[in-house]
Each structure stands twice: as C-alpha cells, then as structure tokens.
Image (cartoon, rainbow, N blue to C red; front, side):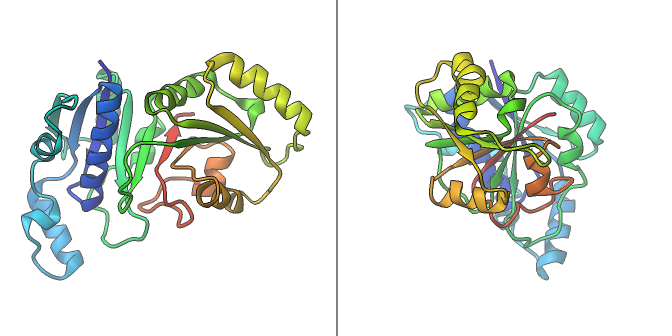
Length: 274
C-alpha cells in the first residue's frame, strides 16, 4: 500500500493540501500519514503575533486533520487509513529517516502564493527533498480544484528519466488526464529541430510508457517564465512536474523552495528528487 505524507504546520494552506492529498489517496488507493510539525501552543503564539490578535483554534488550524479528512470523505468513496504523528521535536535528518523508513510514495505540502504569515515550522522542506527518494507536491493555498486534466512535465528530453515518466504516467492514467511533455532546451544547449524532437519523443517517451494520451511540444521560447505562463493559462496545465536542482527548477525557483510559490505559478507543482 502506498503512503502519502502530509506536512502539517497548522496553517490554512496545510488544511487545503490535506484535502488535495485525500483526493489523490482515494484515486491511487493510498494511505495518509500526517506529520504535525508544530506544538499547538507554539503555533497559536506565532499566529497571534503575526495577526496582531489571538486567533481561534478553528482559524489557526488547531484541530485534528485526521478527523477533518474522515468527515469530508463521502460514504461511498474509498476511505484511506489516515494517521498522524507529532514530529515537532524532529530534526530534518530525523524526518528524512522517517520518510525513507516508511517508504513514503509522495510528500505533500501546502504553500502560499503571497506571504500572509511567518513560517510556522523550522523544518526546511527543501533540505528534506534533497535527501530522500520520493517527490514533493506543493499545493497553492487558494487552489481549490481537485484532480488533474493536464499534467505537464517540463524537461530537456535529452535528459529524460524513466522513473519520473512512470510516476506521472500512473498519476495521469488514474485521472484520465493528458500527459504533456514540454521540451525546453537547457541553458547552454542548442535547441532541437522539430524532426529530432519528434524522434526523441518517440524513443525516450512513448516507447517507455505506452500511454495514448501523451503529447509533446518542442518549445522554442527561451524565457521559461513566459513559456510556463502559456502552459498554465493557454494550455490549461493543472500540474507542473520538475526535477529538483536541475535546469528548469532553478530558473523558476532559484536555489531553493521558499515559503511562497513563484507568483506566475498558480497551480500545484510536483518536484522529483535529483
């Protein structure tokens, strides 16, 4: 049985990410493990300072996400096993060991698009991602759509990784989503001709995953921010896949994941380990 790990810092974005994780767990028949990163008292104090007033338990997220997910699961839907752990005293190394020891399939974290509060946890998810073998899904705080219709993998096809292809293909297949391969030549490398790109797409992509809703674009635009804007707003991508610390990740995120998503990315992003 697969397990989805949710980072819970008792923020509104964590609650939204939990509901998003539940949808995936129901589709993929996975269990959910919630890691509570903060003591309730610490969260309440931090948010009160940030907001300038004492916030209620409901508004700070100081309630059981386990119970919340149980309550919103439809009676006729797959009901995943949902457990939680208090890891407020854990170091990043200990969380990495937990992720590895429990063979976590996917990590999920809510993230703001514009900063409205200080960080509620001392855990750096970038440091965790750098040391584990499973991907991290970042869910924007105000993103309410559930499911996927157009999963987009941004890469240089000369460096395509089969394991990533198989992961996102499985996700696409479960949702009946389109899988769109967006080729961007890495900085310093020449662009691909359309004929060679088509040949590479067939040999490195379609011959390895056998999914009939797979498509590709040979992107000539060198400004990745402009290209991503087109993918999301014109081509309706609702999940963007990247590889940690490779080519396009650093063009969009810089050296690391911060407390907010880049402002031109309003959709979930799944980041695969290097």
